[in-house]
Picture 1 (cartoon, one colour):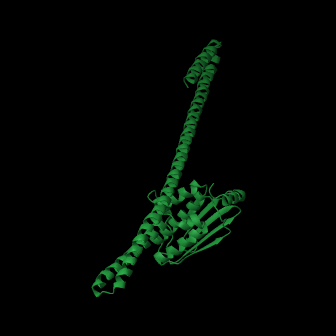
Picture 2 (picture 1 turned 90 degrees about the vertical axis):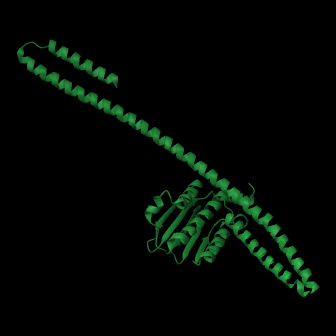
Picture 3 (picture 1 turned 180 degrees about the vertical axis):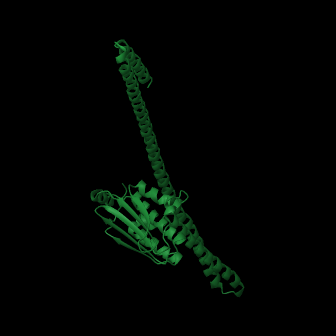
Length: 307
C-alpha cells in the first residue's frame, strides 16, 4: 500500500514538472493548470481504488481464514461429540448388562433362598412360625419388586431388544412402554427396514425416537402419537407426529434446549438431519432423514454381525 502512495506522488510531481516545462505562453498556462488539476483528481481516484481493492482483498482473505477456522472447530466438535456419545452408549451397554446379569442373578438367588426357607417353615406346621412366614412372604414380594426395578433400569439404560432383535423391535417396544408410562396411545408403522443396520445408526435412530417421545410427554399436551419408520431408495425416514399444541419455533434455536440439540447432533453424526416443525393440521412433527449404506454392505453386516 505504501508503494501505491509513493508511485502516485512521483506521478503527480513528475507530470506537473513536465507540464510546467511545456508551457510556452500565458494562453497555455490556464489549460496546463486545468490538466494538472485533472491529473491530480484522476491519480487520487486511481490510488483510492487500489487502496480499497487491496483492503477488500485483505478482508476477504481474513474472512476465508476465519470461516476455515470455524469449520475446522465445528468438525472437531462434531467428532468429539460423536466420540462422547459413542463412549456413553458403550458405558450404558456395560452398566445395563452388569445390572441385569450380576445384580439380577444375585436378587434371583436371594429370592430362591427365601422361598426355600418359606417352604421349609410351612412344612413344620407350627403356628408360632406364621409371623415369620408372613415376613418371609413380604420380603419375597419386596425382592420381586426390586428385580422388576432392576429390569426397568437396565432397559432404560440400553434396551436389550435393540441389540438382540433389531431396531424395528426396539422402537415397537419403546412405543408400547411410552403408552404404558404416560397413558398416551403411541402407534408406529414400520415398512421395508433391513434386518441389520450398523449399530451406530440403530442407536442414533432409537435415541432420537426416544427423545421425541420424551418431548411429547413433557411439553406437547398430546392425546396420541403416530410414528412411522420406512426405508426407500436406501434412505431411512423416521417421523413422529403428535396432536398436541405444537412446537414454538424459537425453542428450536434456543441453546438451552439440550434435548433438541442432542437430536440434531445425533443425526448429523451419522450423516442425517432432523427437522422439527409444526404440523399443518395440529401438533408437532419430527422427521429424521438418514442415508444408509448400500444393500451389499448391509447384507455383509447381517452375515457378519461381529465385524
